[in-house]
Amino acid sequence: EPKLSGKFETLMTWVDGMRKLKVRTNADTPKDARIAVDFGAEGIGLCRTEHMFFEAERIPAVREMIIAQSLEARMTALAKLLPMQREDFMGIFRAMGERSVTIRLLDPPLHEFLPREEKDIIELARTMSIPVDDLKARVDDLQEFNPMLGHRGCRLAVTYPEIYAMQAQAIIEGAIAVKKEGIDVKPEIMIPLIGSVKELAYVKSIVTEVADDIIAKSDVKLNYLVGTMIEIPRAAITADEIAKEAQFFSFGTNDLTQMGFGFSRDDANKFLGEYEEKGILEKDPFQVLDQAGIGKLVKMGCELGRSTNPDIHLGICGEHGGEPSSVEFCHRIGLDYVSCSPFRVPVARIAAAHAALKEKSGDQVRDK
Ligand code: PEP
Ligand code: MG
Image (cartoon, rainbow, N blue to C red):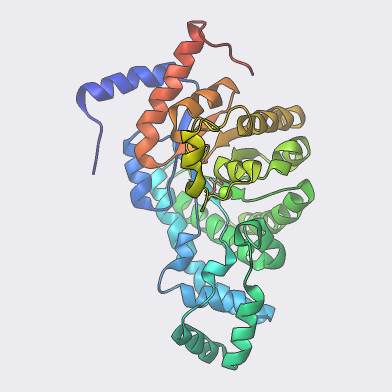
């Protein structure tokens, strides 16, 4: 496994003494979490949970859960997934020790979970004891023309509250179990794709009801945070309201860029090259934070959030969290941390120190 060593490590110690921004990582497995810790990550800023549901032994239960129309059948399918989710989170908590771990609740484009191949459809109809044609009709109903603007993120918890309830249970039970092993775990539960405070209040109540009940019945004292991604322009614009229901914000600048520009994350590469060549755009905004536009939304989200919740913890977990000029911007607007993929952690640490030094030398005025 890659490790920083020798003189470079000495340099990084200086770097860490200079920066104000904390650096966390985006990691979904204990292996990635350990690599990131070796690179100096101070926590997990984004643990995506989508990929966990695609594993071969889980996907049939996931499909059952989505397609089933009775709550009972959905609960049966979720009961199969719960122990595996608990294990997922325990592995990550152990790898991160006492560092904060932000786990984001499921945020899939729903259609990716739907069975496509005839053999999968037939098998699923058999397991669920329903006619193949009924199952096909249900799958058709769930298809969407524009999945990235559709049934994803917290919207899934509005239609299927039991999914987030299961994940909250797995997180809290896993955290309690690892705490009993002697590690002072710090779980943070993050709700994706929030666009309004009422949506957050509703979804948060699903999470806290489950979590508080488990904690009350346990002999271990556990603190946890609940916060939200800010990745829809409306969330940034109404961040003062949203902050009343959130202990932290994490700016999802991938989606914020997509929805701010109206550029598809999946397809914009078909024309962005020409935009750069013709000087219409200086940089790919999915790589380098567009400070003049999307950055303003982030800055506004911070200011509004702090105006109603001065203690709110602020971070970023979009790709930009590991890109130097974007990290400098995050420093200037006063975020608490950036979060990036494990291999970008050293770059983010250096960029954060560079931003602090630049400010100190008067090159840059901190506009917080
Ligand atoms: C984002 O939108 O910036 C984000 C971090 O979430 P994801 O990339 O998983 O949509
Ligand atoms: Mg997102």
